[in-house]
Length: 62
Image (spheres, one colour):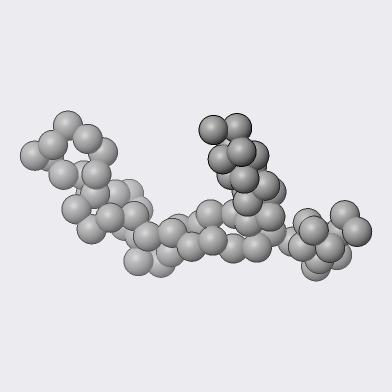
């Protein structure tokens, strides 16, 4: 379990999660269920983080 947590932290250090243009903002919620679950889903994309020099976090640490 700890290995998975460290892997997630490492991924979030290198990448950020952003919404795609297809994502409905604000989301239209499904009233038939008690859960927050938009009928069309939530579309996201994973984007590399870059520092001020245009380098990724990994390149900046080396």
